Length: 392
Image 1 (cartoon, helix red, strand yellow):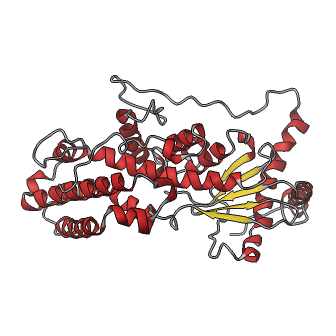
Image 2: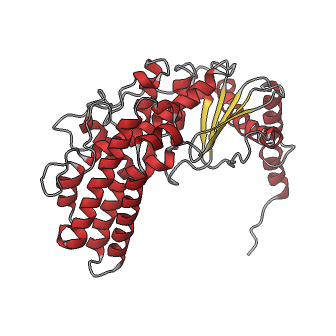
């Protein structure tokens, strides 16, 4: 059944908000034209593009799936949740053949990864600049991670009564028991791999930004599209890309000039050298930024004298032995603060706002900023102060 609408009143509505010639659209067009010389940074889930303005050529930095070593480290960090998944699968239906076939498949993959892993692989083939000098330590960590995971899988395949949360935590994740001969908590491995990934991406993004001529006080930032899970990365504090950009600006970028637009159309850069294809994204992205800004700029025109909005300073909570619940990510007090970093791993899984890969990325960003973007001077938690036994 059609809903009656008054043509005259609908026309009044459309005059301001509907169509390309509405007052709101015209305001956006004028604001976009007036800001044509300002740098626009657009970040998607995989790429970052800088549009300098005034028709100058864009520049692109890919930072996720094309990153050297990203999938290799992610595969190792995923061993923890993969084993926990087997525990939960068995708890749901112990008689199902699915958990056993997945355990055998994971065992085979871990054995293959262990055989392929070596210092030479990381130094000469994967060759991540931010990891230079740490290749032997990374290889030893991965050999241990695969070795202790293989022991765990062999144990539970031989005796499925061991597929309990208690056995997983005590013998594998926290290495408190002796059943597997675990020498280092696997929690440290996960923290280290997450940190290394954040270290590399942040190092490259920061170096790229330093090569650009950006007036950070006037820069415009748009983080668009899906970031990780459908529910994650929609706030400044839960979005690791925002943290990287703020760190690269040396905290000079005003927060009110950074917009997260999860419903905005995203894009993927297929060929970084195809500048014409990349230019096609600039006009619609600028329109989104200035549309948002134009609405904000109406507020002082209409309501001067009333309290204004200002992004609040955020102080992360600190945890102690008495802390039982948290609503936000706790502050890391140093590279040996494993309790806080392990707590963060729990939070990024339980809090749907968080990016799973972002549990220690903000800490990597902070440490690189404080050390002049020199990764060799940063202490990698779970790696630099840990001696991983080779050949477990």
